[in-house]
Length: 349
Image (cartoon, rainbow, N blue to C red; front, side, top):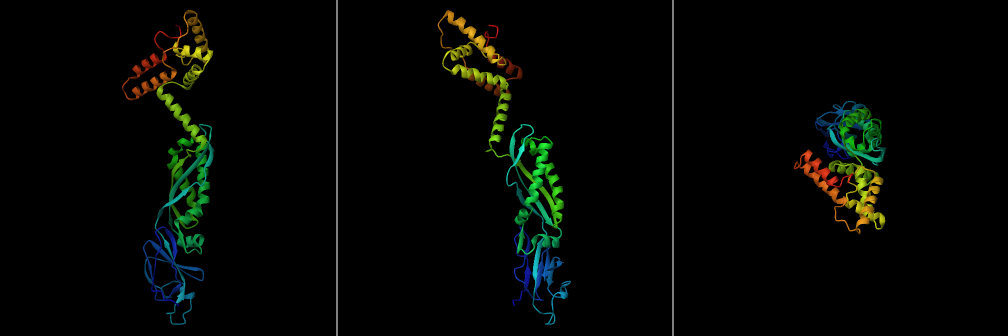
């Protein structure tokens, strides 16, 4: 039987509990326990300890309870077999977690079903080594932080999904704005999960949600982001959705061949569509009347005026000048009206 001289920790910093690989111990074996650790002897399935930091000589005299577990046929110097467990009491603050699949939630503000993902990290510390060894480690040769994350994934993900869903649906918080609540949600989950961790001898030091997001590749997310970008663009330029649709419809009609296209092309050249909030039907009627009058006088000619696309471009450039501080608000409004209502071509002419 091998005689072991020194027994000490030889595990990785990310290991929470580690069993010394040899069970052949002598009564003269030196057990070294660091200040950040605790040690336990296991004989016949019973944990003896904890053995605190320091240098210990394994013998029946200085190991409490060991004398009743082994026989001493050789005057107290007999080799014996026993497991030695080391428990890492250092706080581990980088245990990662993440939702394995997106949470399908209806955004209360935009009325769309969006896939929500979340990830973060938490910190733990072993506060009851015996409970931790008995309830989690068992017969494993070692227990790492990644193993801990796997053990608690089911409990954590269920609670996380519930709290995020409550924040979004019950509280009416949009998915796109939920990042403002990360601190509050993190603390709520830390308190909720601490009780579960304590039953295994663990203290949940911190729990952080680093991000709650939606995948950019999802069609619903792409639709929503495109709509928000369009709304922001129209706000900067200074006109609303109805006015932009008026421009789009008239521009498409003017590009079409045939009578309708000719009417619209002439109408755009004559200033039709200037009153952008005016219903499209009224604009068509005004353009048609004007075309008839002009056709009675002279043959139709190709108009050489700016298109609606040019007007939109001019409005965007004008908005940028205002943003850059080159134009005042009053100057911006005056120029905007000049573009939308060319001189001498108002609704009454």
